[in-house]
Length: 279
Image (cartoon, rainbow, N blue to C red; front, side, top):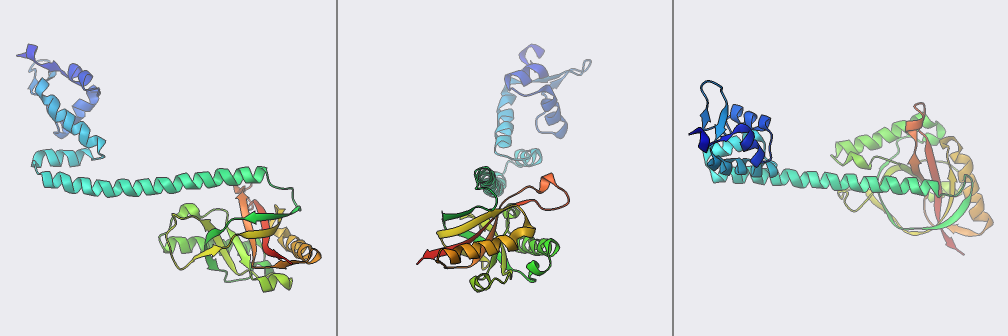
């Protein structure tokens, strides 16, 4: 009889699995050897058992857990496997959505690092066309310009908590920006209005979603939160000297952060900007 059977090693080899896997399947009752030698305790399998092993491997490839596979094989109920696979299909779709979000975030981070490397030097004023942007924003509860970085950090946490509260993807919480009303900017009064993160078309729609229109922007670059007031003043002076009409709200955009290099403060590379119309 043994000459017609396959040893556990032979069974494992022809099915491209390990001996330990076959032993596990035996222990949990998925597929048992058809013969065990009474003296040596060696396990032997019949070639016809390949059909069951193929089904086990196929179900694993579908993402089913071993306990689910055992439940299905023991029940012989096709409705059960259908319900498990419907649930698994939903899980895979959610995983794919999360992976797409992660891929997009990686692409944005690479782009921001490249833009940092190629950005103008600190203090340089430029005129740039910036495409439209979509943001998730919340109003600032305190004017952090009157206090400093500690209050700004608290406002950032309120933004993050808003994302959490509404079950929104945390992967967008990066490189936050702030806005200030045009009137405040023109009067030289630094008054924070909203704090935001940039999002994309995959981000869920909601009441906190806004669109920043495309246009020509006068921009200035800096790398210190503490110097924003001075650089915003330079931006306004440049617009006035060149007779540019400020056409919208002021934006402070964090192009990239390097907090990882300093555990005492948030390292930021900033682009201050205002949309302009040419008179």
